[in-house]
Image (cartoon, rainbow, N blue to C red; front, top):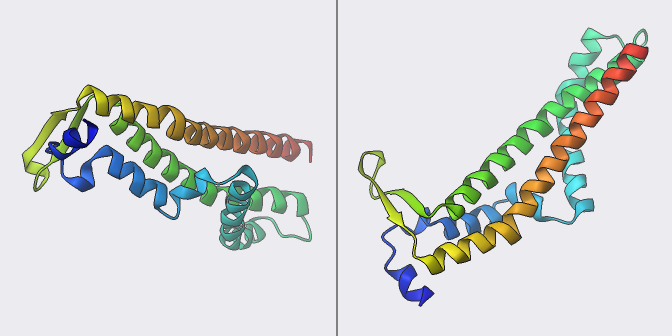
Length: 166
């Protein structure tokens, strides 16, 4: 029954929420969220390390290393976090968009361009399947991203406290 419902779906293949989910799940940046915690954190550290390439010279100009070593370290770390935040926001927005499309009983789609938008109401079987995917696949990913944001906030708070103590 699901197969016949999928075939009668008027939504173009690339705009069907399940296909959007599969595409996002296989995209190089977005699939990192699905890795085990150790590998996921190592990817985040890798992005932070790359961001340090830009952040360290800027921090060195602002706080000469030989005079303000602690301030240099804190500023470099915070500046390097900007790249991490941008990547995390991109991942969060992508997964949230797919979550919303899968959860919604009505799908907006475009047949040939922005000027001819249509809506399609999902049959109950497809809606149930999509909501199961949201509950068991996407919700843990979004929770992981939220935990990562909270961890970054803790590091920023700790850095602020250290900054004021020095």
